[in-house]
Length: 324
Image (tube, helix red, strand yellow):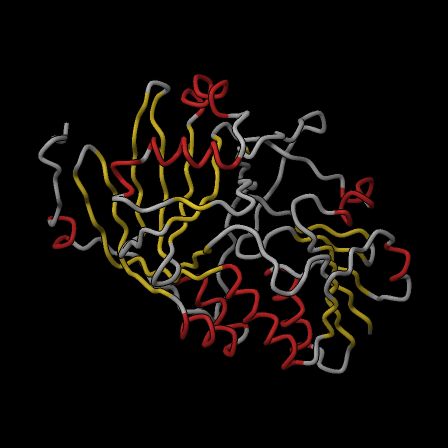
C-alpha cells in the first residue's frame, strides 16, 4: 500500500508517524513545499489531555515533547489589577519549530520518506497512491482541487485575533485585558521556552468595528509598534515579535473523497460551516471559526482540572488600578 501525505506541518507529520506505526510494511511519504527548518508563528500549547493522546498513540513522541519543553499547572486571570490563579490544569508549551523537528526525527526513525521544497501543483503525479492525505493547511490545494467532492463550508466568527511572540516569560497561562479609545482588547499568553512566550491578541467585534480603520492597513512593523504601545504597561520593558503573524482559523475539516482525505488541524476535531459566499479577510487579522473537541481515547487517562482555593486566594492588586 502506498500512502502520500501532502503537507509537512504537525498534522501531516503526526499522521505519517501513526500510519507507519500501524502499517510498517507500507510506503508512507510526506511532501512539504517549505524547507525542513521553515516555520511560521511561535509556540504551541498542549493540555494534559492532549499529552495523554500523545502517550497513548506514540510514547516516543510524548517523551520527546515532555522532556524538552515548559510545563505549568496554573491559569492566571488578570482584570482591573487583580490576578486570580487557578491550579490543576496542566499544560505543556513548546516552540513550533522544535515540535516540527521532533516529529521529523520520529518520522525518520520509523522509515517515513520526507521530501522538502516540494511544491505539489499536480496531484496527478500520485495516481498510483492508494491513499492521499491533504495536510496542506488552511488554504489546502488538495481540498480546493476536490472541492466538488469535499464541499467545504466555513463560518466566520466575529472576533479578530493576531498571533505574536514576546520576550516576556510567564509562569502561568495568562488571560489579560487592556483598553484604549476603541474598546477592550484581550490577551492570551503562555511561555513555550525559557526566553519566549506566545501572545494571541484578540479584538472583540465592537472593538474591531472602531479600530479597523486605524489598524487593518498597518504593515508588520507599524502593527508591532501599535501593539507595544497598547500593551506597554503589561510588557514590562519586553518586546513583541512578528513572524508571518497572520492569525489563522481555529478549525478543522476531516473529509474524504474516495482515496483523498484532507485534514487542516491535528489536536482538535472541528466542524466547519461557512457560507460559500464568505470572503477570507486579506489583512493580518483573521476571524475565528467554530470548533468542537473530540473525546479522548479510552486508553488515555483523563486528568480533571481542579481549582486551587489556596492559589485563588493569592491575588495581586495594582495600587493604581483597584478592582471593581
